Amino acid sequence: MGLDRDFKKIIKSHKENWDAISADPNLSEAFIEQFADKLNWRMVSNRATLSEAFIEKHIDRLDMSAILSRQKVSEAFLRKNMANFKWNDWKALSACQKLSEKFILEFADKINWTDITAGQDLSEEFMEKYADKIRWEYVARYQRISEEFYWKHKDKLEISFLLTNKKTDISTWSSEFQQEKKKAMANIATVY
Image (cartoon, rainbow, N blue to C red; front, side):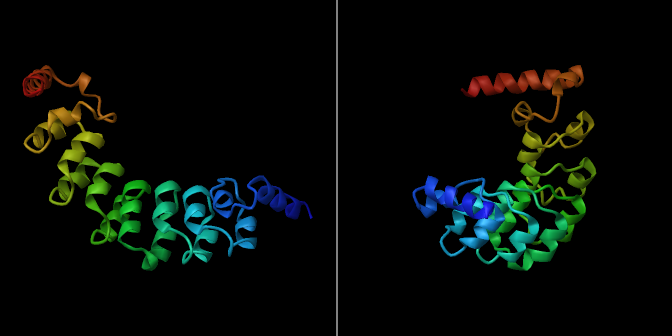
């Protein structure tokens, strides 16, 4: 009885505008199921936080790209449901899900390596082993790297991108690197 009152309250507060109702991030799974035929599932996908069991049950109605971009799901869930995934779903999970290196390798032919390089935390060993697949520009921008790794791959890593990397503290690196950085910054200033 209390649940029905809550449903009526939500519907009334949005004046029966089902797109507005669908965009409410606080919709319960029970509400979504009761009004499944009236809701805009794309908006539900973009706003509601849903359990893996609910997502699995309604995977054919949901926008998986939106789900995978906004909320974390387990690798077990991904493995179980990937047959339903389209290209843009793989792109979203490559960029936004927390994936193990083992998972990345298992599905190396499906994931988006550019988004993996930008969105995942990769070990230096992994990046070296799969140097031909990763995007080095994104390694410099988004990956945590050591000074030793930098010198080893200097030809592929631009200092200008390292300057914006929030995961790598280059201020503690050697004076030799600081000189390289100074030269690179002077070159950037000359270009502009």
